[in-house]
Length: 141
Image (cartoon, rainbow, N blue to C red):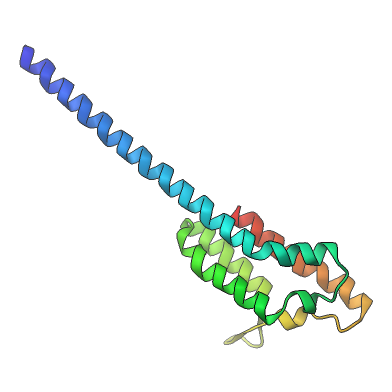
């Protein structure tokens, strides 16, 4: 009877060690997801703030350099996100940054947000860019 308690005790210890190990891995993975999402959000924050707080042409805010920075953040950090978030972020990125010129090709489209001095176009296009960027940030957060 004494050996039964010893076996149950060892089994209980092994089970608790395994469970602690699994919970630690889960906590580390959640922290990794959170950090990747924060890095993506931070990459877009400067341009989002400029679009919301200034009245500059959106084309001056969403430049080629901003496009490269955003695309680099998406490519670098989205693989660290869970699969569903990764797919949602990439779809939101495509909506913001690419324009389909036909069914086969997508071209970088930050130039479409330039209003060329037209206040009417600025009022129509700026909220679209802001909405797309906010969507990416909300998914990443």
